[in-house]
Length: 128
Image (tube, rainbow, N blue to C red; front, side):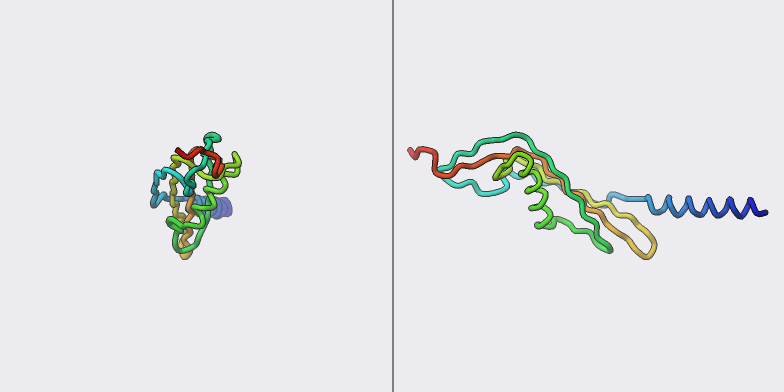
């Protein structure tokens, strides 16, 4: 009888762990953008190379969908890799994952950016 109760205890523990590891992707989005910042007229824009960055945040009860502060932060993370001033032709995606725990549901939002970092020098190009 003791072994039966002990087996039930372990079964209960494994069931709780299985429930806690369940996550459902509940939303995603993508945005193709030609450039992250305004490039000044009469400036030289030099591509520095491909960059990628990822940033995740977790919230309880509701997800952060298209948060401009997080989008800006993931862009800055990508630009730091090459020391660039702006991103060219970049793809910004986000994915929302929900972990449904009874009483408390939390959401993880993951932002990813992939594009070309560029450096900008202002006022060096001849005007025609």
